[in-house]
Length: 61
Image (cartoon, rainbow, N blue to C red; front, side, top):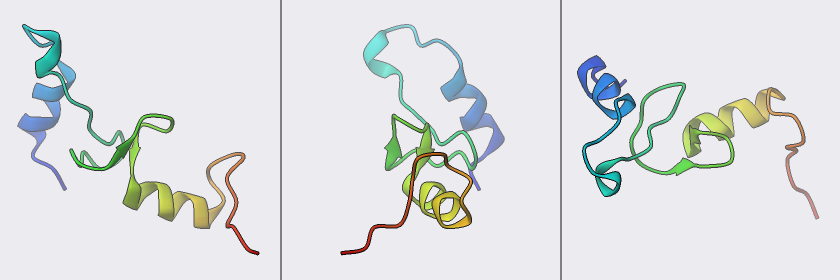
């Protein structure tokens, strides 16, 4: 779990646009965040397996 101070800091508008970065909306993880969902890869995987993401299904071939 990310520190609350860092989550709040990332939510604020940065002084310069290039300093902004994305964090997972669910757990606050700063790395491997998918723009489409706003979630990190770990949370996307968990939610997809639980069927909580509409339009996402486990692939099989």
